[in-house]
Image (cartoon, rainbow, N blue to C red):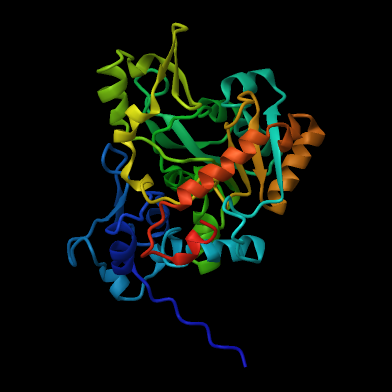
Length: 376
């Protein structure tokens, strides 16, 4: 006789104690968009980027709705309890092995956009932009939860959540920021516009939200996320770095930055054509608090994980993890909108991904869920 499934009773009180107050919280905002009572706040400001309780009745660490049985926030959290194993089981039907420190996947490719403009505007080959444009134009999705620059490209380099519904808006959000944007917050706008087929482009912590939600049956909030695109990510930086380091020490005004990348150093291209390099060690002081204990470099629960690491900076290292991810890439190849090469063409990039994945997993503390450190 099968054992009866234990009823999920965990609420905000446990989430606050075990994830937010403990330092495990990445600020992904999964709990914010899942809260049916709208009592979880979030601020996109330096030193913030984490959820907090809005109601004063029981203080910051408890919730009257949780006391009455609401469990949506813990069901949506990709750092609460056995989150990794649950997401693995839901997506792949098994838990990763010791050797799979970069998560479960089927193929690794090097991919770039065929469209020259998408390639130039995008980052490291423009794959993510190409995927979103193709999915929108082929009626696979209605919109994409991504990030834009606050105030366009005029006022600075602050990343904010945004909803892209056409080619122009996708390209507006192209390029890497290296500061944090809780892209799932754009779900609110998508909901207001009655869009129910969405792609999520997010850092590793964010791409675990949907499968954790699905596994824990959080409700209808997770259903619109049809495609999950993950960005390889070792850390993000506080927005104040641009003012306090880039401008004060190097005289680089953020409103004049055209593009940036990280290839062993922080690379910065200015609108006037100048190029600058900043030692990454100088940036460590601005590492966002939510990244300090994050174990997931390789966006292990995305359908497709992507990143510009290795020697071939004009191609995107592309990790295909799910059947959906494979179907999208294959269809795009057939349509000729992307070009692909075997990942083995750049073995250094693949090795670096595994190395950085193992290094990130070492951050996960011994007192938290032990399965996350398997293989370290």
